[in-house]
Amino acid sequence: MREYRICSNCVMDTTDSRITFDVDGLCDHCRTFRDDVLPNWHPDERGEAELIRIADKIRADGKNRGFDCILGMSGGFDSSYMLHIAVTQMKLRPLVFHVDGGWNTRVAVQNIENVVEKLGLDLFTEVIDWEEMKDLQLAFFKSGVSHIDIPQDHAFIATLYRFAAKHNIKYILNGFNYSTECVRNPLEWIYHGSDMRQFWDIQKKFGTRSLKNYPISSIWYHKLYLRYIRRIEMVRPLNYVPYVKEEARRVMADLYGWEAYPQKHFESRFTRFYEGYWLPTRFGYDTRRVQFSSLILTNQMTREDALKELEKPAIPVDQVPHEIEFVATKLGITPEELITYRDMPIKSYQDYKSQEKLFEIGGKFLHLIGKERTLKR
Image (cartoon, rainbow, N blue to C red):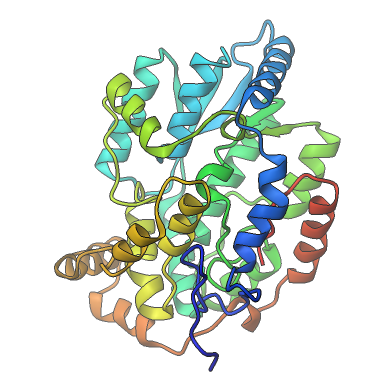
């Protein structure tokens, strides 16, 4: 067992087993932000000029089309604010694409409808085969790994990519941003969602039905084929604008009646259960450490406030039985069966077949050529 330590600057700690500290107690997440992200991130006049250039190019390429890009909208804040920026600042005509994996909250549905309607856009929704999704999610529970949200995340990404390819849409707007996501979840917490070798290994070992309709997108498909053969570009608008979360929330509330969630990613009932209860209870991983550390590094939260928030559970204790019952019922099992998965021996992604080395090499290459500033490790 490693001696417990916490970063002197952010709130990442040794629950991330690969974390390292320098002589001043500064963790490697903070050093990566200081050395790699900050010098190359320009949400100022330079970013604005680049955003205008990108928007001009997208509009020109999309001329005489019904839309000039596609935007995947989860109902979360980042994708919703990105849609606001895409339409009001970039003057784009995005196809708004939503994937319904069966776990939308009422608030998320309302937020999506409000923003889309007030911007005068159309919403395209793809519904995932629920029986296949349910069986796949149960397979991940039975595997004992921490990354049980992969079935939902992968379905969202794969459906979006395949729709863009099918309809020859050349630009995909992506909500990733350094302002709120400059610290990445460690691999042992949330593993690569596109590692199809691991995906199929778990599905074959624990799944009970074949996946005939579930969407698949391998790393080769969306990182190589779509990017270099089909020339489909991923654009991250939020990295070019000043994106201060609380200021943006006020804008969204005033313009669209946006209703905030208790925590990032809580627009999904499953992700709320997974990140708010399952990860911290079963594994000791609290994703708020990653989220708060990102906000600390971008001067949107103090370390003291983050530590106070971490003293409280993400989901109040009195709500936990209801969350367990809701998720179990939705998956077609009893709460008692779900609890047996919580208490079973812990497994990691390293206990199953994987393409970890491939992802490691690819990540380092993209970092070397400046395409990725933060590495998942």
